[in-house]
Length: 149
Image (cartoon, rainbow, N blue to C red; front, side, top):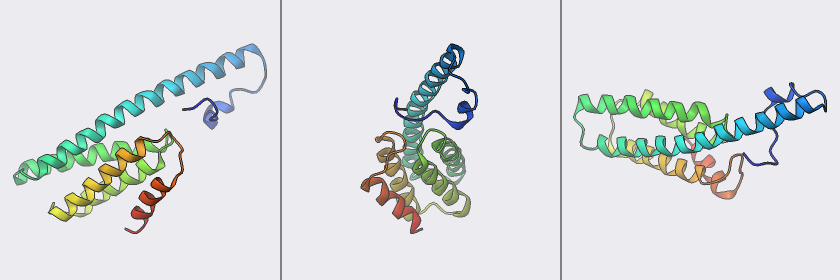
């Protein structure tokens, strides 16, 4: 989270006065949020790598192993979906939701489904390369692709 970004609303209500204690609490809140944001970025990179690995494995998996891989893919995508908005990555939330919806509603992992999920994962990697709350043409194209579905 950059220095010029506001702290979340939940913390704003705590800082009513200009006294030293409120300044100290505000600085402490900024540090906590920055630490959580850095941890989030590390974790989401690992989660995206795990998604890639599971998608690679699904090609050769038997039915029982595919079901296990589907569960893992859903769980990770659901985590990404749930955390993206919190840390300023609404497009990660949308991509995670898209993968969750595919896993829930499609019962056969054919090559076309795998291609779609691989594209979503590739787009996640692109999104996470930008700072939180970024808007640009690249991210807008990803959002438009999701909106077409």
